[in-house]
Amino acid sequence: MFSFFKKKPPPSSAAPSATAAAPVLQTAAPATVAASASTLQRQSWLGKLKAGLGKTAAGIASVFGGSRIDEALFEDLESALLMADAGVSATTHLISELRRLAKDSKAETPEQLKGLLVDALARLLEPLERSLVIGPEQPTVMMVAGVNGAGKTTSIGKLTHRLAHQGASVLLAAADTFRAAAREQLTVWAERNTVEIVSQEGGDPAAVSYDAVCAGKARKKDVVLIDTAGRLPTQMHLMEELKKMQRVVAKAGVASGLENCPREVLLVIDGNTGQNALAQVRAFDDALGLTGLIITKLDGTAKGGVLAAIARERPIPVYFIGVGEKLEELETFNAREFAQALLQ
Image (cartoon, rainbow, N blue to C red; front, top):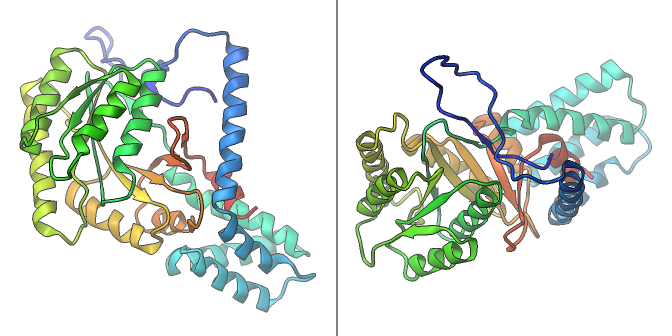
């Protein structure tokens, strides 16, 4: 569990295979030492995740404080899940599934029922659990979008750190030319991670993106990460600008011999925004065709139940979750771990 990025090599002409085993981007190190360090880091991160979801977890856990399973418990649980921003569809599904599981297993106590709810939630979230794959083309081009304040640029810095730590060469594109100091902020992240950056003061974001893709190909980079301007999905002129960037990136890919460019279109979501996060997923997915999500700020008042709503309505993979500001505080999403943290 100490390596989460997979790098697919381009298939050889002699033996092309779309299902060939993907070598892991992993630096050489004694396996036992690496695994031990990774396990400790994961445990520390899970502790922070549980703390971040603590308020939501406490609200749901209080439902199971009684001594028997009755209709009132199910009604209280329904209210608790809705308060946790799980949404009507996911809540209805979980309650129905829980009733079935309770009947099949002949559960007798609220604590047993709580364990069944963990199982039901983990199964609901499983479609969101997927690894970020680098390749098979070089570079893998990723556009990163999100509303202002969601933690988009910080998430790019953290993702760059993970990729570089796993042995991938990264090129950043400072295509957020609308926000003051955005270019400077991304430059700081580039310096901290010792990676290259393409930027233009006051430049057109689409032009910056085009140059970055071409530069990434010429410099034989593994990944090109494109930072885009934060915007609300209701700002239609800005959403159109984002779609224009995507078209220009696709043209740059064609010029560079890339068949799938951008390969990843990621949306960064603030975990504190509740059901508004689901609205953002819908809007950006309709406009761009999202391939993955990064959930940030699950470190305080966040209501993580919204992931259940996303899984039910727009099951787009959650590649990473962030629980703090440190470079290392971005971890891969695991459905059962998250269900346990939310229902601790």
